Image (cartoon, rainbow, N blue to C red; front, side, top):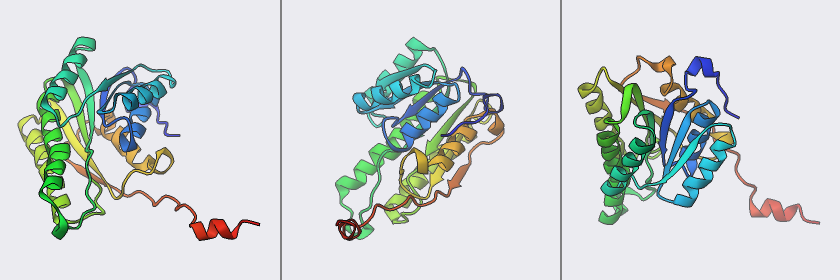
Length: 239
């Protein structure tokens, strides 16, 4: 369980939107903000997943609102923030989880997959910043969760670089009104139990303890989760 002092983090009563909240890192992050007293707007392309995580957050004793939204689709982004404005007016923070990944070797990369990466990670980050910065209260924050660093294929590295450029640009243009940072995990999500270090980093960057931190990409080293037993081992245990 990921619990931090609400007095230390200053998250109680704040309104935080988490994209990609229905699964992986997004799900763990949404629950952690709820556990620390924030109102959570859970955004996911799959409305059932968004609703499920919002229900989990509400069992923790705070408010959660599910919204179906694909951050790589301009109409979805505009509609999501219109709902936010209607319900709350302003936001205190946004956590944007980049959704696409690629394990394809660079020399085998197809154009269609390349455009999928650009849409899901770079375009979604651009749209989220473009719209989200209009709705962040003074002193608000944005935290990006970048594609894992373990894959250094050129196309994956270029996606991370493009999102990093958006972070640098937003920090230069809006230096005093909002803080934009990112975390860079070393691996894919493996569940609440194994991803606590990354979740704590995201909570910290969204809290008052990081008030002066801007334009940073924070590497997060996560331990490898236990591997499931091999089929041979399972068979050997049979009588």
